Length: 477
Image (cartoon, rainbow, N blue to C red):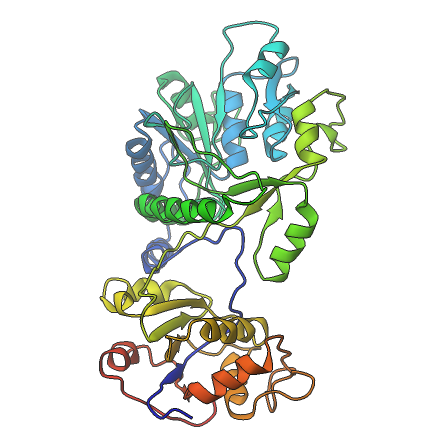
């Protein structure tokens, strides 16, 4: 074995599981939440909301260049409040695409109005203006922008959600930024703004004096505290997503897959990366088998689900659901390019916060980034394959610590010492017989060319190890 190699292990579980979207939360959000809990002011029933709600709404106004912003407790609540503010009621009709999440139609139905389903455009899967025109019965209609996933996207420099009377955003964890659960509405109309403030708070203005119909749609202070930090990070989130989406488009450009197209005056936040393919199910199965959390959005158009079951001729909607259906690929939001030519690589645990803590130290520019390790089998499989294919890497530092129920560090150490048996299971692992799928050649390379040292929770050793090449040996974890 090499004596000049260091393999420092401080880890948790599963390496390549890449979900569709993962919220990126750091110590700033944690500190903000703790501050709210210590204050005891978890929510506020005042018209303007609590301190964090007001600060978040101010940030939204600035970011979207809107006169007013009203936060609520979900994206669905934002749509409901917007419709209530426009006095939508029983007997009214609201045009909505069928190729969408059911919340868009449910918000309409909750007012007593009837959702009227329109078709989509083939080129970008958004609502077709010509289909809308065919369903309009009178003019001078109000428009609510369901911009749930598009906060930060622009058309000709103008933020989505700000083109018409009301724009609604979601702050669900799967969106580009989050508050946990939450939503926000923007408008430039003072009358609508005043109504929205009452609608989210049981129609009250002061005390228990209800003036109009309303519900409890208030955003709690804890959620607002998270959101006010997240919106400061939003530009960097979008920058990372745009960089990664561009790379993904380049890699898929020579395939028969229909990839998303960003127009000349458009700037996407890349909340999702949507492809269309005839081989949807087989591609999806292969992606998922590799730990890539791709998914079908949406398997059933809203006009065909049981609670609506409306007969509508929506050719493009039927096309996208039938012969070809879109698959959504994850666009990683956290971006740590590292130095791919380095002999040293860092792999963290489930949390990305360790890399957050290191990103300003200068260390990340000197090391390669492996990613995050989560499991005893797939995670180790992926790590072995990665180092086998990237022969320049000689030293790997895994950072974090073991957690209850998982012994990835121990399994990796036993693999290095003992290898695998005839059934490709790690010999002497305390985990339930981790089964590997990588070749024996890869495992032998790992055993021969990497020295293994196990350190638990020694976060400060990053800089010492990387700068001086200090080698540490220890017993099993």
